[in-house]
Every structure is written in C-alpha cells, then in structure tokens.
Image (tube, rainbow, N blue to C red; front, side):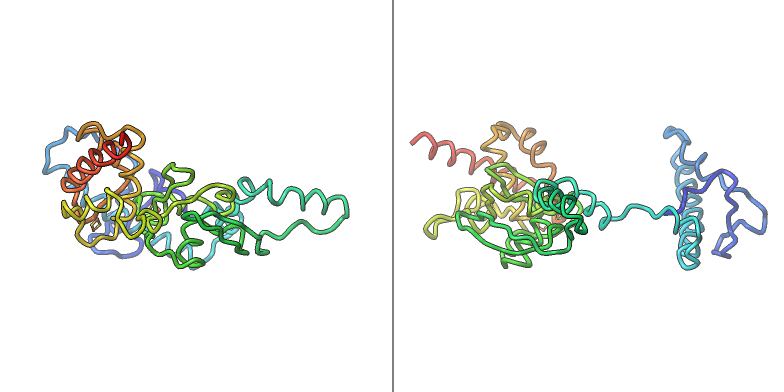
Length: 275
Ligand code: FES
Ligand code: FES
C-alpha cells in the first residue's frame, strides 16, 4: 500500500467532483482525523464528507501508482495474505520440513519445496483421513475443498466472523487461520460430528427450538462456539454468553434467540453430564 497521505499531500489532481486542487488547498487528512469527538454533529458530518473526498483522491492516487508499478513499490512490496501464509508455514510447519532441510544442507541439495504436497493424517470426527496437500492449506480449505465437509462455513477467511469455528481437541479454533498441517495428531471436530446415532446435539436442537437463525450461514460456527462456551463454564449469565460468543457474528442479528438457545442447551447438557 502506498504511504498514507502526508500533510503536504495535495488534493484534487485527479479532477474528482468537489476536488480542491484548483483552489490549491492542502491536505489536512491527518490533522482532520485527530479532531476531538466533542465537535457538534453538523461539523462532524462535514468532516466525514471532507474525509471521504480526501480518501477518494488518495484511492485514485493508489490506483494510479499501482498501474505505473512505481519503483518504490517494487523494491518494498507490501505484505499480503499469500506472503503472510508463506511466513506462517515456514514457522508452523518448520518441524515437518526441518528434517528435510537438514538433509538437504548435508547433501548440498536445494531446500525442500513448500509447494510440494505433504502427506497428512488427520483425525476428523473420529475418522482418520490420509491426504497429500500443499503445506499452506488452511484447515478450513482442507475440510471444505478436499473432504467435502461443507458444514463449516467460510465467511471472511480472515479470522473476523467465526463462521469457520471447529474444535481441535475440544477447544474452539478458527479453521481459516489454522494450517491443516498443524492439526495433525489432534482430534478435529466439525458440525458434522455432533449428532449421535441420528440424534441432534442438545445445542443443535435448542437452535431449532428457539429459531436462533435466519439465513443459517453463521449457525454451524455459532453452535460449535456455543457448546464450547458451555463446556468452558462461560455460559452462566446472559452477559457471559454474549461476551464469550462475541467472536461469532450474525448478519441476520439472531443474537437474542441464540442466547435463549444456549441457555436451554446449557440446562440439558448439565443434566446429561450429571446422569
Ligand atoms: S471465515 Fe474464519 S473467522 Fe471468518
Ligand atoms: S443467521 Fe444469518 S448470519 Fe446468522
């Protein structure tokens, strides 16, 4: 990304509507962002409009600099998701690749290729799966694309929505931010693994009973999180449930019904555990 506009960043050279270039106004983008929140509403609204215009000019500038492929950007490429994953792989999958790398150093061979498929054995919902996948594959992609377990949803793919929640050894994790290679040797549970002998888990039943979903896209992640929330002992009050479920977003805003469902399932789960 190009640097944020500095204070002497001049606006309007792109001829955008309401552009201030002609009048020679200098950018006060950074200064305007630091204005106190106590300003009157009208003034804040105007500030927002001004900021939007400045941002528009900056965005156009970004596009322009992208198309030119400036030397500065070439020599200092910004980090993106691909480079982040590559960096993660080199850290998280180091034990897997380490032995090969040492051997390579000893034999003088080129280092192991991270693109080369790696053999993995994963225990998912009580079943072992043997696969050969790129070491950079996320657990979410492995579940959905390689095994067809599409109950786990991909929402943001950036660790922000919770739609991809699964359990590893009974603990909830975001599968979009977890490398499949790291989950080897651990017990993975997805929404498909909750029902027993055709009977729904009490939490699944409670979501149905309380209409705790509308489109249902977030629901598998909500249920996986909700069960973990009860097991963790974090479902003792409405406030607790809301707090410990706050990593799972619902665009349909079924939150009140979700809280009711968790409370119903909590009682059933506690009764079942004491029997
Ligand atoms: S898809 Fe993983 S948190 Fe959104
Ligand atoms: S039910 Fe639609 S996003 Fe939650």
